[in-house]
Image (cartoon, rainbow, N blue to C red):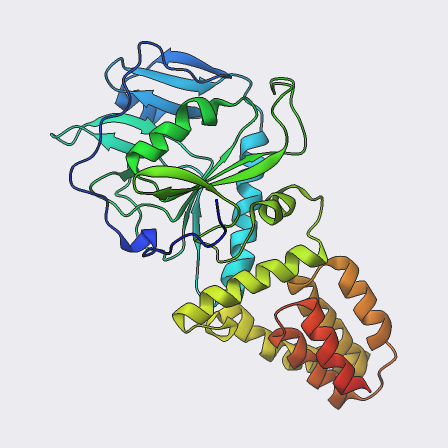
Length: 337
């Protein structure tokens, strides 16, 4: 498929259709790595612990993850962390829900079927559900649904259900770190599925996160610590989202506060340890929130030689304003020459 997927309105601005589709009827559901457990809907809502992936109201059966490992939670929490960094650059919040039920309801409002994704991402945060989860035909759908896959269960069953239920974008990540349950033919990598004309099509790049490629997303989710390249990509995605909505990092209270911190913290600590040393400490703290650790160490090997506190104050503004390490280095070259 070509990379220029036709744009549509953001999913968070599209209410689900009033008429919801039937879930595929099969004699036997197929969720590798899960065990069927008899459960009523009240049992599902009251369940604590175990990981329920799917529930069928017709048979009153839940499919619960067998091994109870933390693999799905790890990848989901990593995605939420990445979204936080993108949101800081955009200037407005992005909400991720790692424990939310996606529900297909009966005409009388009772839940008929339910799936639980590893993450549901809302680019324009609003109340996604009404306590019990996100119901088709009632609630706004997430912009991205994310699944970690070690056993091909997403491809074999969940993919078709997500498609039929109309979720606009699905990411499926097979982590670099394998598990005993992973089939030998299931290789690591991330796949983006975008809904077009009611059918999922594989896409090399996300529609919801402009220009973010499947390869780059997979790297960001699996590298031990965020690399310089990943940090730059997160900043780029956030800035592009902000540009389309008229927001900047200055619209985020935390980023706006960094400007004040660069001066206030430096001045306060400077009273006891010297103005210059206090500034450097404050700048390092701010830089560490935005850039990879390796780049910060490289940056301050040079800044430690700067004696002029006015120059350091200007450097502080650049650290806050620059969207990536390359831009910061270019701007610093002008200031420090």
